[in-house]
Image (cartoon, rainbow, N blue to C red; front, side, top):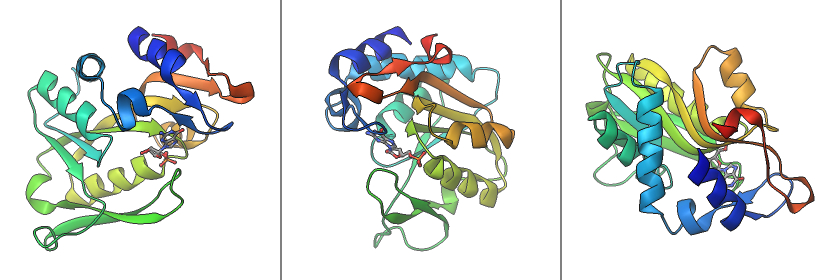
Length: 194
Ligand code: 5GP
Protein backbone atom coordinates (compact mmCIF):
# COMPACT_ATOMS: atom_id res chain seq x y z
CA UNK A 1 0.00 0.00 0.00
CA UNK A 2 1.67 3.12 -1.23
CA UNK A 3 0.54 5.71 1.34
CA UNK A 4 1.42 3.30 4.15
CA UNK A 5 4.92 2.64 2.80
CA UNK A 6 5.50 6.38 2.30
CA UNK A 7 4.45 7.07 5.89
CA UNK A 8 6.73 4.31 7.20
CA UNK A 9 9.67 5.73 5.22
CA UNK A 10 9.11 9.36 6.15
CA UNK A 11 7.80 9.08 9.73
CA UNK A 12 8.91 5.67 11.00
CA UNK A 13 11.82 5.56 13.45
CA UNK A 14 14.03 2.49 13.44
CA UNK A 15 14.73 1.91 17.13
CA UNK A 16 16.81 -1.23 16.64
CA UNK A 17 17.32 -3.98 14.07
CA UNK A 18 13.99 -5.47 15.17
CA UNK A 19 11.75 -2.59 16.31
CA UNK A 20 10.09 0.13 14.26
CA UNK A 21 8.34 3.05 15.95
CA UNK A 22 5.32 4.46 14.13
CA UNK A 23 3.76 6.57 16.87
CA UNK A 24 3.00 9.49 14.54
CA UNK A 25 0.29 7.67 12.55
CA UNK A 26 -0.56 4.30 14.16
CA UNK A 27 0.54 3.65 17.75
CA UNK A 28 -0.09 7.02 19.44
CA UNK A 29 -1.29 9.73 17.06
CA UNK A 30 -3.62 8.26 14.43
CA UNK A 31 -3.89 9.29 10.79
CA UNK A 32 -7.60 8.87 9.97
CA UNK A 33 -7.09 9.16 6.20
CA UNK A 34 -4.57 6.32 6.31
CA UNK A 35 -6.86 4.26 8.59
CA UNK A 36 -9.67 4.69 6.06
CA UNK A 37 -7.46 3.40 3.25
CA UNK A 38 -6.24 0.53 5.43
CA UNK A 39 -9.84 -0.43 6.19
CA UNK A 40 -10.72 -0.38 2.49
CA UNK A 41 -7.63 -2.44 1.60
CA UNK A 42 -8.44 -5.19 4.12
CA UNK A 43 -12.10 -5.17 3.11
CA UNK A 44 -11.06 -5.60 -0.53
CA UNK A 45 -8.59 -8.41 0.20
CA UNK A 46 -11.09 -10.36 2.32
CA UNK A 47 -14.21 -9.47 0.30
CA UNK A 48 -14.65 -13.14 -0.71
CA UNK A 49 -14.34 -14.55 2.81
CA UNK A 50 -17.84 -14.01 4.24
CA UNK A 51 -16.52 -12.08 7.24
CA UNK A 52 -19.15 -11.42 9.94
CA UNK A 53 -16.87 -9.73 12.50
CA UNK A 54 -13.42 -8.19 12.76
CA UNK A 55 -11.39 -9.09 15.87
CA UNK A 56 -8.36 -7.20 17.12
CA UNK A 57 -6.40 -6.49 20.29
CA UNK A 58 -6.50 -3.22 22.23
CA UNK A 59 -5.35 -0.57 21.74
CA UNK A 60 -3.55 0.00 18.42
CA UNK A 61 -5.69 -2.49 16.51
CA UNK A 62 -8.92 -0.65 17.27
CA UNK A 63 -8.68 2.18 14.70
CA UNK A 64 -7.87 -0.05 11.69
CA UNK A 65 -10.36 -2.71 12.84
CA UNK A 66 -13.11 -0.13 13.09
CA UNK A 67 -12.41 1.17 9.58
CA UNK A 68 -12.27 -2.38 8.20
CA UNK A 69 -15.57 -3.19 9.90
CA UNK A 70 -17.06 -0.04 8.40
CA UNK A 71 -15.92 -1.03 4.89
CA UNK A 72 -17.18 -4.61 5.28
CA UNK A 73 -20.40 -3.56 7.03
CA UNK A 74 -19.70 -5.72 10.10
CA UNK A 75 -18.88 -5.01 13.80
CA UNK A 76 -15.36 -4.79 15.16
CA UNK A 77 -14.46 -6.39 18.52
CA UNK A 78 -11.31 -5.72 20.50
CA UNK A 79 -9.90 -8.29 22.91
CA UNK A 80 -9.06 -6.67 26.24
CA UNK A 81 -5.76 -7.04 28.00
CA UNK A 82 -7.20 -6.49 31.49
CA UNK A 83 -10.28 -7.83 33.12
CA UNK A 84 -12.61 -5.22 34.59
CA UNK A 85 -15.63 -5.11 36.86
CA UNK A 86 -17.83 -5.17 33.80
CA UNK A 87 -15.83 -7.85 31.96
CA UNK A 88 -15.02 -10.77 34.22
CA UNK A 89 -17.47 -13.60 33.53
CA UNK A 90 -18.30 -15.59 30.43
CA UNK A 91 -15.01 -14.94 28.70
CA UNK A 92 -12.79 -16.63 26.18
CA UNK A 93 -9.20 -16.01 27.35
CA UNK A 94 -5.69 -16.71 26.07
CA UNK A 95 -2.16 -15.77 27.09
CA UNK A 96 -0.10 -13.48 24.86
CA UNK A 97 3.54 -12.60 25.37
CA UNK A 98 4.19 -9.03 24.21
CA UNK A 99 7.17 -8.61 21.89
CA UNK A 100 7.65 -4.91 22.63
CA UNK A 101 6.83 -4.87 26.36
CA UNK A 102 8.24 -8.29 27.31
CA UNK A 103 5.27 -9.09 29.56
CA UNK A 104 2.60 -11.78 29.30
CA UNK A 105 -0.98 -10.54 29.19
CA UNK A 106 -4.15 -12.52 29.43
CA UNK A 107 -6.42 -11.35 26.62
CA UNK A 108 -10.17 -11.82 26.81
CA UNK A 109 -13.33 -11.46 24.77
CA UNK A 110 -16.87 -11.83 26.05
CA UNK A 111 -18.62 -15.00 24.85
CA UNK A 112 -21.51 -12.71 23.91
CA UNK A 113 -19.65 -11.36 20.89
CA UNK A 114 -18.08 -14.48 19.34
CA UNK A 115 -20.14 -17.49 18.30
CA UNK A 116 -19.83 -20.59 16.16
CA UNK A 117 -21.97 -18.82 13.54
CA UNK A 118 -19.28 -16.16 12.99
CA UNK A 119 -16.55 -15.90 10.38
CA UNK A 120 -13.76 -13.83 11.91
CA UNK A 121 -11.14 -11.62 10.33
CA UNK A 122 -8.31 -11.02 12.82
CA UNK A 123 -6.41 -7.73 12.46
CA UNK A 124 -3.30 -6.39 14.14
CA UNK A 125 -0.90 -3.51 13.65
CA UNK A 126 2.38 -5.49 13.56
CA UNK A 127 3.30 -9.12 13.01
CA UNK A 128 6.61 -10.13 14.62
CA UNK A 129 6.79 -13.56 16.28
CA UNK A 130 3.07 -14.17 15.91
CA UNK A 131 2.16 -14.32 19.61
CA UNK A 132 -0.65 -11.77 19.40
CA UNK A 133 -2.15 -13.38 16.27
CA UNK A 134 -1.92 -16.85 17.81
CA UNK A 135 -3.65 -15.64 21.00
CA UNK A 136 -6.46 -14.14 18.94
CA UNK A 137 -6.74 -17.33 16.84
CA UNK A 138 -7.00 -19.28 20.11
CA UNK A 139 -10.02 -17.13 21.12
CA UNK A 140 -11.67 -17.77 17.73
CA UNK A 141 -11.07 -21.52 18.08
CA UNK A 142 -12.58 -21.58 21.58
CA UNK A 143 -15.75 -19.96 20.22
CA UNK A 144 -16.06 -22.46 17.36
CA UNK A 145 -16.14 -19.58 14.84
CA UNK A 146 -14.55 -19.88 11.39
CA UNK A 147 -11.27 -18.02 10.84
CA UNK A 148 -11.26 -16.05 7.58
CA UNK A 149 -7.63 -15.03 8.03
CA UNK A 150 -5.27 -12.53 9.60
CA UNK A 151 -4.79 -9.00 8.26
CA UNK A 152 -1.60 -7.23 9.30
CA UNK A 153 -0.66 -3.61 8.66
CA UNK A 154 3.12 -4.04 9.02
CA UNK A 155 4.66 -7.51 8.85
CA UNK A 156 8.32 -7.84 9.80
CA UNK A 157 9.22 -10.59 7.38
CA UNK A 158 12.57 -11.23 9.07
CA UNK A 159 10.78 -12.50 12.17
CA UNK A 160 9.07 -15.86 12.24
CA UNK A 161 5.39 -15.19 12.93
CA UNK A 162 4.18 -14.89 9.34
CA UNK A 163 5.99 -18.04 8.25
CA UNK A 164 4.62 -20.06 11.16
CA UNK A 165 1.03 -18.92 10.61
CA UNK A 166 1.16 -19.59 6.86
CA UNK A 167 2.64 -23.05 7.51
CA UNK A 168 -0.36 -23.72 9.75
CA UNK A 169 -2.60 -22.91 6.79
CA UNK A 170 -3.72 -19.49 8.05
CA UNK A 171 -4.37 -16.90 5.36
CA UNK A 172 -2.17 -13.91 6.25
CA UNK A 173 -2.50 -10.66 4.27
CA UNK A 174 -0.02 -7.88 5.08
CA UNK A 175 -0.27 -4.35 3.68
CA UNK A 176 3.47 -3.69 4.06
CA UNK A 177 6.20 -6.28 4.58
CA UNK A 178 9.57 -5.21 5.92
CA UNK A 179 12.54 -7.32 4.86
CA UNK A 180 15.08 -5.60 7.12
CA UNK A 181 15.60 -2.78 9.61
CA UNK A 182 19.38 -3.07 9.50
CA UNK A 183 21.59 0.06 9.33
CA UNK A 184 18.68 2.20 10.65
CA UNK A 185 16.97 1.77 7.29
CA UNK A 186 13.59 0.30 6.39
CA UNK A 187 13.79 -2.09 3.43
CA UNK A 188 10.50 -3.47 2.12
CA UNK A 189 10.16 -6.89 0.59
CA UNK A 190 8.34 -7.19 -2.75
CA UNK A 191 5.23 -8.83 -1.24
CA UNK A 192 4.57 -5.64 0.70
CA UNK A 193 4.89 -3.41 -2.33
CA UNK A 194 1.31 -3.89 -3.54
P1 5GP B 1 4.08 -10.63 17.87
O1 5GP B 1 3.00 -11.01 18.85
O2 5GP B 1 3.75 -11.00 16.46
O3 5GP B 1 5.44 -11.11 18.30
O4 5GP B 1 4.20 -9.06 17.92
C1 5GP B 1 3.12 -8.28 17.48
C2 5GP B 1 2.68 -7.30 18.54
O5 5GP B 1 3.80 -6.65 19.15
C3 5GP B 1 1.85 -6.23 17.90
O6 5GP B 1 0.55 -6.27 18.50
C4 5GP B 1 2.54 -4.93 18.21
O7 5GP B 1 1.80 -4.21 19.15
C5 5GP B 1 3.85 -5.28 18.83
N1 5GP B 1 5.01 -5.10 17.93
C6 5GP B 1 5.83 -6.06 17.45
N2 5GP B 1 6.84 -5.54 16.76
C7 5GP B 1 6.68 -4.20 16.78
C8 5GP B 1 7.42 -3.11 16.22
O8 5GP B 1 8.48 -3.25 15.55
N3 5GP B 1 6.93 -1.86 16.44
C9 5GP B 1 5.78 -1.65 17.17
N4 5GP B 1 5.39 -0.38 17.30
N5 5GP B 1 5.06 -2.65 17.71
C10 5GP B 1 5.51 -3.93 17.52
